Length: 247
Ligand code: PGA
Image (tube, rainbow, N blue to C red; front, side, top):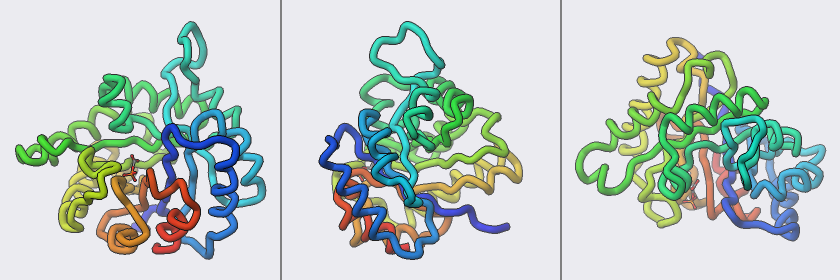
């Protein structure tokens, strides 16, 4: 079995105006011979200009969410087809900030995964436990339950990834130990094999939550870690490059 190609994706969240495209350009210019695929997921308003700014580079552009439907009376929402037309190649789905802030359930995330595949976007599906759930000893059960509920069978044979992001590690500067990351990633891999058979070996399992240049090498080289989903540290090219070039 060959290991999946790693993916390092930046999640800009609700950050970035046109001037921020310089950071994306500097990221693209500074990548050496990375083994990883690299993506930046800016706010939707920057997808098209970022595609222009990164033309000719290997850095992919992604979105941060999509609606399950292709079109309709859904004020304020964007469909996978719209995001793909704007230039997105990937889409983050089920981020904990959407699960917590907008009540997104596993079933809704699975419907969005379906929409992403329909629209030609590669899903990055996020899962992760809260601190209370970890303290209660429920982390493995919660996360493998999210994996089972959020990943529809039609992912088999398609390009996609899972991002394990402990909620308590996002934006806090806290990270799990390497042993905790490896334990969770192995449990996710075992669940993917149960669900998808041999295809369960294909998607990279990213780690996300306070990944920084200083901890990137250790995290990225941990067992079953196939890349990173990076929030705050993806906003500045120097930091993001320090993570990308740690692999
Ligand atoms: P962080 O965010 O790197 O700022 O912790 C990660 C994420 O939310 O994807």
